[in-house]
Amino acid sequence: MAKPGCVVASVGGGGLLMGVLSGLADVGWADVPVVAVETHGADALAQSLAAGELVTLPAITSVAKSLGADCTTERILRKCQDLGPDLVRPLVVSDAAAVRACLAFADDHRVLVEPACGAALAAVYDRAEALEGLDDVVVEVCGGGIVTPALLDQYKALIDA
Image (cartoon, rainbow, N blue to C red; front, side, top):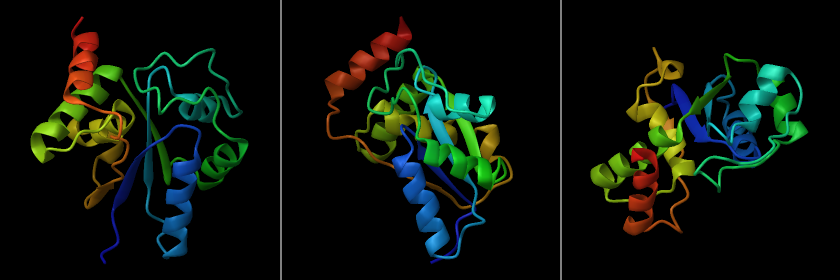
């Protein structure tokens, strides 16, 4: 298997991100950057990294409720700080971008995902600056068990309003 140039993953409390980072290290790819994507209103990791300490959000205001954790874990915050911004690149996208990515992914691949996953997909669909200059981008796609076409329509209505 070829070494990826980058991995893109959605972040909530940090467990999935820690798993991705650990998995990369286990296969000798600890130097592969990870773009850690959250939506505005569910961006505890990005805010914590910017502040240099754990930040607790007053509420999850994003439509990406399954992504939302009011606070990331101390362990993942320290791990991200230790690796630095070259290896863990926080990215915060709008709910609208996440929902647009869900809709585009459904059209492109006939797979329904929720906005928590749409956050990671938005990085690719919107050609995020965090991916600039990187080839062979791997996107961790997850979270569609609760999604229906009707629910995606509801999300779309929210962002169109």
